[in-house]
Image (cartoon, rainbow, N blue to C red; front, side, top):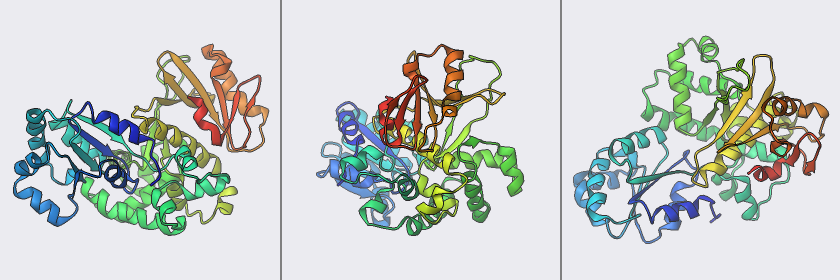
Length: 387
């Protein structure tokens, strides 16, 4: 069992909330983690028809049975009426941390929680492994292209599955199971083409109209399908920073994939060697660094506080981190050799916003850290030093 950073936060929350909800992408390790953390709790999987029927027969009696001993309910969104009963049970028992709910369909799960369990449940997100978790597990990652190609889903490290075998099956299963249950998609083949088009736009400003024109679908459908990818933790939309240091700012969001192994598969990249010369390698690396930061926030029970900044003349900073009144500007470059033009966007933004040099950071594809006059330089392996 690889220790997950989120474990500490989950155990802390069980002391303050009657129920804990753990969401995240399919196969990110949610079930493994909660069964390891709560070995004495009853385990019920609502994707198992026998378990589902047993709970459906008398949900109130089922919940009362475990209100003091504890129960893990996997894929809890499969039985929506359970949440209404759970509200009364937790209010009556006043026991903390006895109901652990998990689900891979964030949209459906949170919709039910908002309706029935607001204020009674802590909502946490478990993503695939972060780089620090792999390092602590004795699996240090030294080759950047191999890491980007492999991705970070637990099954690849646990069962020694080749990425080129794992991800196509993952994508097919995701489309056939999760997408169907979240929304009635007319053509799953068109949806699969849609995901591939999104992969080709990673790290770029997202235009719903452009994607819709290529697929022959309207703007609203593209917006709806993007929401599905977000709810399934496949993609992350990075919003532009709201503070007007300059009024001529772009208002579109940028699209990133949470897992670069999945991204490489969607782009039909077949090996780390092929990735090393791929025209989207820079965007894939950028997607990796941003997703690692988002995972780090989620795994510490925090909401992402990340933005990007770009004006309409092309000046840009890849990542802005807002921590109270403190702002950090981060440029992300995949090259191993540091060039002076890497600092161009940081210098412009630093002058515009009067940001201290200590809050200007370059993350690059090399292995050493440096203190340069223009900014602090961090290796991709040490991205955690930005916080």
